[in-house]
Image 1 (tube, rainbow, N blue to C red):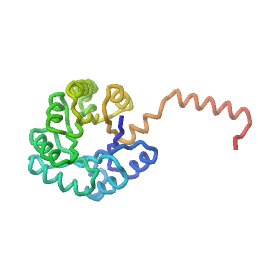
Image 2: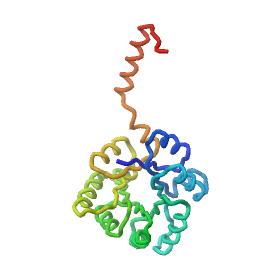
Image 3: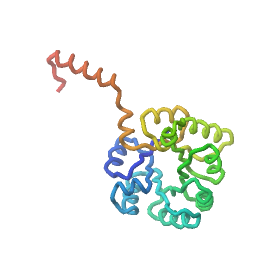
Image 4: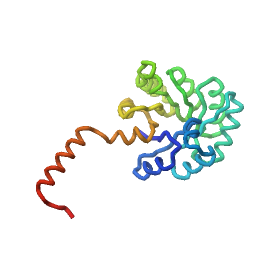
Length: 217
C-alpha cells in the first residue's frame, strides 16, 4: 500500500520522505490555511520534494470553474493530481480533465455508488473518507471493502485512496482490505511505530544491559 501524507507542512514531509515513507501528498484548503502560506508557493515546494502525486484541490462549485482552476493548479508541476469533490459537477470536471490526460483525485466520497460513478468518469484516485463515517457510527472500512470488491469485479483502474485516516488501526485495516493508497497525517504515521510491548521490552533490555557494566563503543 502506498503512503500519502495528508499535510502541507514541508518539514514533516521532508522527515518522512527521508525514511521512504512518502509516495505522495494530499492537501486541501484547510491544510493550506493551517500552513499559513500561499497555495501555489507551498504546493510547488511539495512537488519539488516529492516524486509522487501531490493532490491540490479546486474550490469552485461548477464544472467549468473546477476545470479552469484545475488547469491553473496543474501548471505548478507535472506531478499535480487535481482534486475535485464528488458532486455531479465534480464528475463532469473529472471526465473533462482525465480526457486531457491529467491525474484527478475525486474526494469526499461516502458511498460505493459514488465511487462507482467516479471510476466510470475516469478518476485516477477515489478518496473515501473513513474517519468521517466513523464519526457517524458507520464503519468506514466497510466502504473501503465494498469499493475494493466493485472495482475488482470490473477491472476499474481507479486507485482507492483511503482518506480521513485517524488511527494506526485505520492504516492496517486499509492495507488488509487492499486499498491502493492511504493518506494520513504525519502523527498517525509516526504512531504506527509505537507499541506498549516494544517500549516494555526495550526498557527491560536496557536495564539488563546496564547491569552488565559493558559498553559497545
